[in-house]
Image (tube, rainbow, N blue to C red; front, side, top):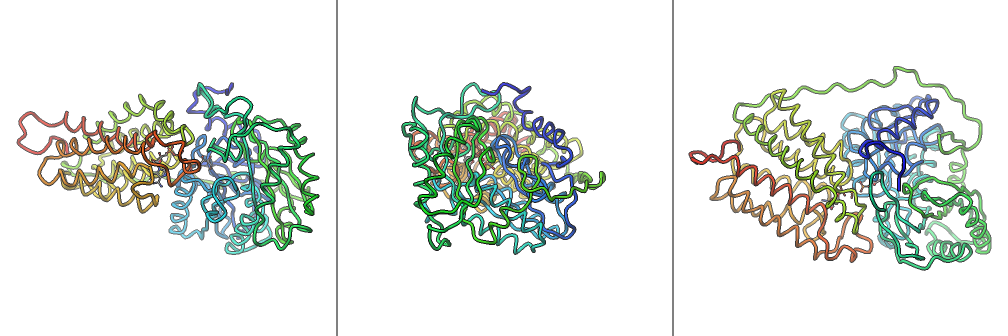
Length: 585
Ligand SMILES: Nc1ncnc2c1ncn2[C@@H]1O[C@H](COP(=O)(O)OP(=O)(O)O)[C@@H](O)[C@H]1O
Ligand SMILES: O=C(COP(=O)(O)O)[C@@H](O)CO
């Protein structure tokens, strides 16, 4: 249950505003997130972190001297968009390049990767690190698939301390990689979190059981086990973590570790102290020297009842960086930091570029696309709860929310572009940027690619017809696969987009657009249903993937809905006397 909110959709925005106001001496709001409100050393590397909201103090509470230079903040449990990340990175940049650091989640990887490319193209040296400390989310052999959880703090802190002492971008990246390689976390949940406005928790556990290995968005764990007493719980967590010693550590006896006992939202500090009381002797018994311990909330899962234990296997350099002073709203260490406020005029807002004018034929098509977007928005909003329900079975349950935010933003941007004289290509590109920017998350990034590619292919001059639209859809499909790396059979929306594209190409050989689209839409619907038989091989639903067997992929279902609605609109627009292909497309 969440008690304090107005409109659920405004929750993240209002939370950031309140947070910045409460910590104005340390942080400042910029479009897309927050940056330090204190001066950093000119020429130094900026460490820009980020991810979805709902994990406080990750990510904004970890911005401040000795810690991150800025945080890009997405909506609840959805990655920020590339546009947000670029905006924060530009504001945080000190001239020494930018390291983008984030947890290894599909949407984050896509958006931060895109942001990195854009920043480099603007002349800002940039690198990325995706943090992978959660040992329950994949085997050691597939460490690069693991999620980032409380270990985020370790990587942020080490990288930022290296930046603070004047390391180059390559050196800061090397420190971040070393910190990531030496950090291991294991978490568990007793009860699910309930996002603002939701009627029930994202997931629940059977009475008396805990989800051992559960992720910070309710991703399935290793096993549901009876809840033991504190001593046994400490044993389960320490034993599991001591079974996976990083290869860099020569021997456990004598090794120095930093420990984080992290509450995930609803577990009390008092309970965490009780757990630590039992963890500490077990680590000592293994011969480990405890160089530092942090007990509290560092990376949470909204109001989920759960906790995690992190071991950081230190070397001399890492220990110095971990123990270096820091002063952020939610993390303090040492007292030797001098604050020099940032001048008030440091950040200026970007000016919106003017829209390219379309030919008369392209404007007609643009108008038709606007009608389609209106109908699609209506349909997605009406089905948002159902999409969320499907996504919650093996994902994080936010697909309906993300799609609603994205499609509404796209529709608004398209209307504005239309009023400014856009052709169909520019209108779709504006809609693409708005969708990716507002929705964030994996599907936001993917829909940004789909609409952007369609827009580029259709352009602002020609009247689209069946063949050119089929070609544009094929390009969008190739673009999505190149960008997101999903293949047919991985249980994503590619399992609809690819057969739909193929069917449209075939039908467009001898049918006008509306009829060809309708025929291919049937294939899309069947393909979406068929994803129920697949197990996810990519993204958040991958661990314990069998749970999603029997349920279709949420992104595949929403794509099929959009395709069907588009087909209906195209059909409705066909004149009775078909003397030309179609009135609008
Ligand atoms: N690599 C990928 N390529 C294409 N589509 C993907 C990929 N990963 C996930 N998806 C699609 O995104 C959908 C999830 O979107 P959404 O719930 O909005 O994002 P998130 O998982 O970031 O919360 C999935 O159902 C799947 O169809
Ligand atoms: O939810 C988050 C990112 O998830 P995506 O599925 O990648 O959008 C975020 O909370 C963690 O950064």
